[in-house]
Image 1 (tube, rainbow, N blue to C red):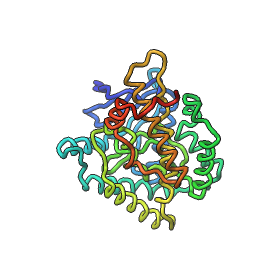
Image 2: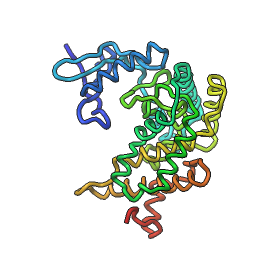
Image 3: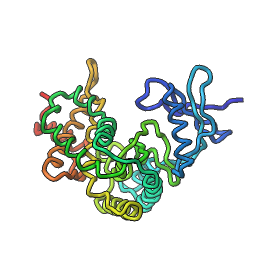
Image 4: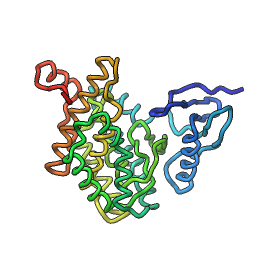
Length: 316
């Protein structure tokens, strides 16, 4: 008898869900044809030595596409971080950073072992896809300026020096377990390092709502470890490109936040906050080609400054 229990809907997908079978220790992902594509791609990655669960079944049944994969652990690194932060006044233990280093190093080595030739066109395709750039410009037309497009061109010029690899495009603590990486829904070719290097920094875009943050020392330790692996694999550091990787994340986290007609105050607040981070990061990147997420205001700080009248509503 089937004991599939719903876990969650599939993020950024119109249809589909994630299910879990306790008796089989399996997860099932369902949806449109892209789900089958994801399953076959994940099998390919597993066969190439990537730290991913190899799907047991990939197919189409009962009018939906699906694949099943073995359970890889009880808690993701995100869940562990939330637990630690709740006990430690928002602090995450260094041991969790070491765990993040290990799984990211394993992923980075696998990506570096199977490179693809890069071109400016390939880098631009990744940047536009990873950042939902066209969508951001469409929803925030005042940001579609010659200056901002020039910064995107600069990132392409810099990043096309890196090899392309099998990219996750949504790599972070929620999709990372101590020995495996799940949810390759958005997979595409990406510059080497674009997945792993931004792993800790993306927490800053959540404004503290994730319940945890990382210290500058933890972020530095993590990025230094990624450089050591990159030196081992391709003979170069990846940290000089961290600003370029984070530029893509600035677009990504602003995408799909513009309030629609009838949206409540929470959505307006989220959009205004993400706009503030975007504009702050763009200014940093324009001046130095670096982005320091440590200077991002938390959501609570943003709210206080808004109430004090020091932050205008973006786009107006």
